[in-house]
Length: 263
Ligand code: MG
Image (cartoon, rainbow, N blue to C red):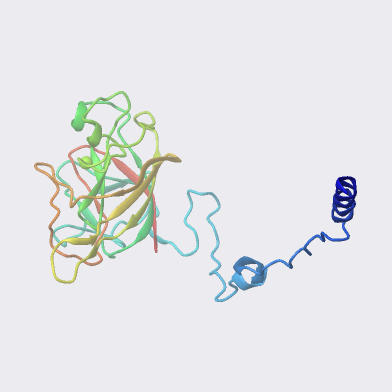
């Protein structure tokens, strides 16, 4: 009897393992999920078509949608003195030159968000040191200075050298050319947005600066208008679109090929 039971158990085990009893469960169909329901064309945006503009002959040249602020000829077309009178900066060899006591000049047009290209040159004849050598500046919306300085072999405080957002951010690197050589700034500026019910920034101004093709300010958030003495204030007067200013700091710094694009 015991033998019969053993044989029966072995027979059952054989049938079970041979698949007559155990059956594999069928593979379920795949469950559709979000991305699998999507088709490529569902995320393609065709309209409106991106505006077509013509690039400049080189990356230094103004593209077709730029406003040329100085082309080497007439300063009075786009610039004016801070007192509202015609500028007394001089033009020599197609360059606009600040002279001692000539005062700041400002663009007649005002801007909010923009891309600005400007070329500058400090005197080849080196004189002075630190902040006294080839000092000028490009003020964005009249309030925020991108420093212009002869920073080639000329130590000064790091947040005051060429490429600095003056007294706020040092440049990431010193990529200055020698005195007397032309240098470029390509500046991308996002104007501040202000809170409705206070004088504080909702979003502060942001600046990116590329000097001679090299990134020196990477989308930095400014803490307030440029201050020579004291901390930049967090609370300032609200402002809308404003001019570009070029600084007369008593040194004959030259500018040329200035163009800007509204963003
Ligand atoms: Mg300056």
